[in-house]
Length: 473
Ligand code: AMP
Ligand code: ZN
Image (cartoon, rainbow, N blue to C red; front, side):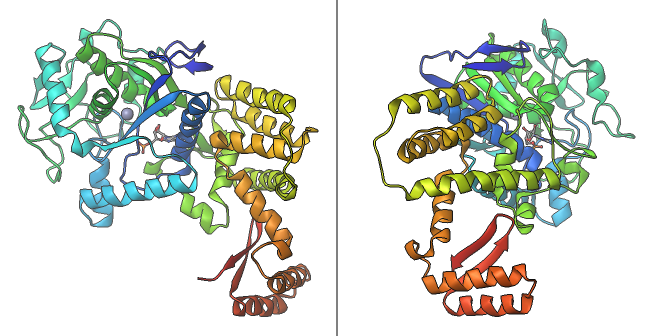
């Protein structure tokens, strides 16, 4: 498999350190608000990467942190504490906010078929580990105390700007006007490992440390959680592209200083979801969530499908129109699969199976080219192979794509063929009458028919994906 590596700026052959096994780390969400669909683009594409690695037979162990302490509004060490900001906004404690938005995050992931990583670690549960690693960095001379805080000394490294495309000026990015630069730092790029002199008098979460009562910086979380769970060497580290600098740059600095050797081989960065007015971000206040998509009648998996249609290394523009286009093509896809589910089983056509499987595998094996993988799926539908061959391929592909293709197609086939579904023919007849009434804009009749359907124990709903019929209760 070829994977683009942000460290070398090239596609490289992916070779795990230990044959057959992959260690993978993902920066988790900062749980002071709902995840927006931009954040979730990153998690969808990382999920595809993980599932594709498994698809090729590799044994993946994936670890993710939950940032519930230490992340300030600028990715440098300035601005407000994000968790405290969330707590104040909602008149709750920081831990209440963390619990609520962690649950909300996994709920969204479930709706998007994003697998939960094998190990998930809230940063607040690893304080002793952070203190242990920071103490070691102090002993090795990579960290210093100034003004009460502990800083990493970037001048001790041969090369700090490892990703190459950043420089000192980028450190200003995100620093709001009127926010003072931290005068304790010996070098501009130095970053906080442990805060004791908090500028937030009302800092809720504080722990004892050899340097006084305080709390950890954001970057140390990921280094420690990764090293503790995945060992001294890491195969792949993932995150959104905004994490590359300073967050991942700092992670590399402190991990390699602590370990005394190189740490992570491949860096996988997902580019941003933008709107016409720029990058989608939580701090802008107004952002799109999975719940909002659902309120507007979109199936969250249509958003996943929308993401799969473009490459993870290109920024993607979100608009309702673009999402509507995804709805249309997703529905067409399901419509094409639906009749296959009704065909009698037949022997697999192995030659066609192998040919089509290979083209899907090659698409994803070429730096996770998901849109080509979707094309490979269409090629299955166009092929002359029998229905069983096609369904088997689709089921295999969907282990990576995660679109519930067979389930949705079966539901659609059943709904289209009321007699063979669980839905009584009488209900299906009323549903058809209601569709006709709506088409004629006779909404009074449509409502009347809906009530009749309800009296028979079924609820009928119009969504952008078409008519949905569900059993009540
Ligand atoms: P956060 O919750 O802010 O720590 O971010 C969670 C993940 O979402 C990180 O990997 C970010 O790099 C990523 N991210 C943030 N904004 C976007 C965006 N607009 N598009 C894609 N990924 C993003
Ligand atoms: Zn991280």
